[in-house]
Image (cartoon, rainbow over all chains, first blue to last red):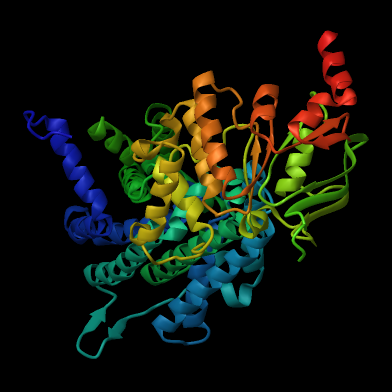
Length: 326
Length: 251
């Protein structure tokens, strides 16, 4: 390509976007660092990074492997309950509790994945939905541990002593940066996985399962592993959510939550790295703004969602990419 | 393993789909290093035999022998790893990946299937190998394009490069020139003849003249049954083959 022609504005933007794409993990981090200062309140910022991570993890299966799961609330919820129960009932330190939450989500994903991976397309979505509902009712019934319909209260992590410094999680700004540390680490690992050889296999499976199989890839095992990794990331998001909210509401396991994460990924752009994060930002900002105006915020959100699907099928970020690269 | 053990063979292969018998008790050897064509009129069972040999599904009855070992029932991905590779009848590539990445992913399948950490851009050897394979099929100048942007004939060549990525001992090609222009066909034939020097090739083909020109052996199927097998001149002189082909041709 020649750079001698007079610079067109779109070429300029295109170069910026390419630079962002090259250092995607870093780019997200920069945006997230200034986040709490531009949003109306810090708790919203925490909420967004947590759901952004949830949507990112979900998108590994949805956008990169090409499999629609309708049961990802299970991993988000088990991550949160695992962490919450470890803190409230077992009295374990916060980091052990988080580890337990993430691993519990991973084990849940292993089991759900093993059962669902034999099916394809809409059947996969239905089987994951059904299994996630099983998780919902099991946790609902374990009232002694989970608090049943009241949710699990008292997941309180006040002060964290790091030796050289201490973090006060009751301060919203400090809590945001505590959360962000984990999210940033997760984004880095996630980016690495996508760029890896395994990431290439996922794309191959999404593009053409038959061909991938003929090349010598075990498609089922590959999908299962992607499902489990996705579950781990969503479990981390759940663990952070438990600490962020200090409670674990039972709604976290409800299929609404599974639908919400699908909406976020679609809103933002499922085939892109930033898409899910962009989707989480749009979704939660809209929710935050519209709830102050009307109690029927879901109606407005639904209309916006429909408009997006109809007019921006690539999602917010996907459309930006398409516009600057044209 | 004796010297004349065929690299691939079927013994009494029968395939039933519900009540329909697509292939009935077929036994055939595919000797090392030879180019064998499977021919027959429509519905002869060519594709069924192809799918059994390439591991798409196991035969209802009978055995598939690879170097003398029965491999019927092994899953598809094991066939590629053993060295039995195939191209599809309908073009089957990774459309939204670059031409180079299509082949590189195929090369990767032999070694790094679950490498979660190393960036794929550091797989120098795989990239070099992919470029080399693309050169063999004449696509080295299209490396950066998306596979979906290639012309039909080019996509078929890409598929052959992908099938070669696992360094197969046996390469199965299902109508490699289907839907190609005469010029494209010539190009692909050249590629096939080049590959035939280094591996055993089995292909299903409709174009009679092409088959007569390039094959060492021809296997003729008719109504799912074995009809004849031999060198092209033997097949040409075979009365039964003439009857089946010419007889149907006159109808």
